[in-house]
Image (cartoon, one colour):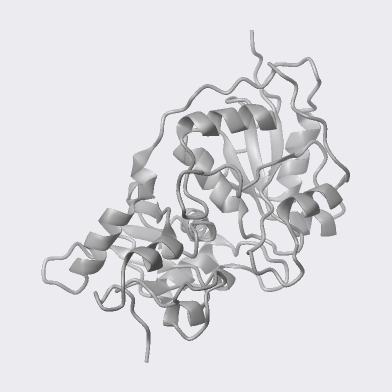
Length: 317
């Protein structure tokens, strides 16, 4: 019989202190089958990172003790030509078993010390899509280090075979937007009677405007008709890289003219930092939960499947 965990986290965004307390009161053992609190590193860098850093490299160099590593470039749909499309439910379950995650684990996803909040919300969102009941985002690993909480380094042992069975989950399609629907939304933009769906783009304003290049060679920059530019950096504390407090985030959404009563779709380059917007909306309690979705393919898919001639790639003058 499985016992209950000794300490539970309640909010989606958690502080280093909250995680440290949860880990202290939920010390895992090799033979225990009790629910656990598991730190999960989601470190990831853009393909044009000037220092050539990789997620696994920084995970090996410094991580939260007992953490596991979620490789965004590996746990995806390998049959898609787009970089970070959601994996199938079967491959997600298999990947969780290989990592050593169980369905009743309470997962706390975290980013790199170097970048602050960046890719962890994508992994948190992925767990939500696949119906994992307990998932949180650490705000953030840089503060964890600065506040003196423990870290470790080196390679980790492989997950114990048979101790991390993860059943094939159900998928929540209500959290995901596919290309066909996005194209219909873009074509309807500005038309009388259109639903007024709001698209928030986490890329830099220059990439959104079309004045800066995309990090992937050959991909044009610009934006989906009617989308709002909401760069990732505007949602974060410039010193710590942590997600801003909910009240500050709410003011940002209001200043951008985002209507909380209308549907919201988050987008970015490949669907990674779009989830930061989704996490920020959650923290600000802005918009209806069942009306907030993420465009999985994001700009990398969009810019390869539509053309400027169609009027579906816009640039500011």
